[in-house]
Amino acid sequence: MTTQPLQFHGRRYHAYNDWVKQEHGGRLQKISIDAGFTCPNRDGKLGVGGCSFCNNEGFTPSYLREQREIERQIDTGLAFMRRRYPENKGFLAYFQSYSNTYADLDQLKKIYAVALGHPDIRGLVIGTRPDCLPDETLDYLQELAERTLVELEIGIESCSDAVLRECLRGHDFACTQDAIRRAARRGLFITGHLLLGLPLETRASLIDGAKALAQLPIDALKFHQLQIVRGTRLANQYRAAPESVPLLAPEGYLDAVIDVLEHLPPHIKIQRLGSEVPPELRVSPDWGMRLSRFPALLDARLQARDTWQGRLHTP
Image (tube, rainbow, N blue to C red; front, side):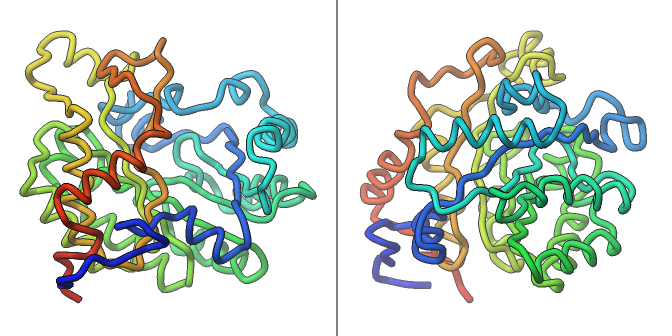
C-alpha cells in the first residue's frame, strides 16, 4: 500500500499507450480480423446464443462483415489506420471476433500464418475465452512468441461466479485463473478483459475481484462498460424488466474503474477505459460522449478522489 501518488507519465494510472511508446518507440496499432471463428457457448458445446450480453456485431468494424479473406481485411484496416494514425511504428493482426483459439491446432496454425505472412504485420493479438486454451495451443503460441509479438487477450468479464452464472458465461473464475497461470508460464503477454456493470455485480464483489486479479500474472487490462446491444438475451431482459439490469452512469462507471485500479499492482497496463457500440445496435445507455474523453475524465476523477492505481494494493 502506497501513501504517495504514483505517477505514470504524468497520470495516476499506468496507460498502455504510454508504455508502448516507451517500449517500442511509438504506437502499435491493432488491425481487427474476423477469421470466422465461433464459440463453445454458441455452437452447442456449452450452449447456444452466447453469453447474455454478447453480440459481436457491436464491436466489429463494418469492413469485416463485407470481406472474408484475411489478407483483404488487413489491407483495408491498414489503409484506414495509416490515415488516422500516421505516427504508427507498426501493426498487429487482432483476431477479435468470438473465440480465436477455438479450433483444431493445425487450423489455427494456418490462419495465424496468413496474418503473419503479411509484410506489414509485426505480431498477433488473439482474443479468446479461458476455456478455449488447451496446453497444445499455448505451447504453439509460446513458439510463436519466440520470434514475433504475441498478445493473448482473455475474456475475464467478472471474477464473481454468481455474475458469470447470471450472464450464462459457461465457466467459472477458477477456469480463468488456471488459463492465465498456464499462459503466463509460457511467457505470453496477457491482457484481461473486464465488463463492468453486469447484473449481480456489486462494489464489494468488484473489489474482491480486483484483489484476486492482483494476484494473477496479468500484463494489461481492458475495461468495458456494460451496454445493452440489440440481438442479445440481455436486450430481451432489459425490454421486459429494465429494473433488472441497472446500468451505470458515467460517474458511477468511472468510480467502478477506480475501485479496481486502487487494488491493482502498478505494473499492469490499462489498455482501454471503455467501449463504443454503434448507435443502431445500442439499446442503452447513451452517454452522449466519445470514448476519447474517458482518459481526461478518469484523470480528473482520480484527482478528485485523491487516489491512484495501486494505492490499496498489498504486494
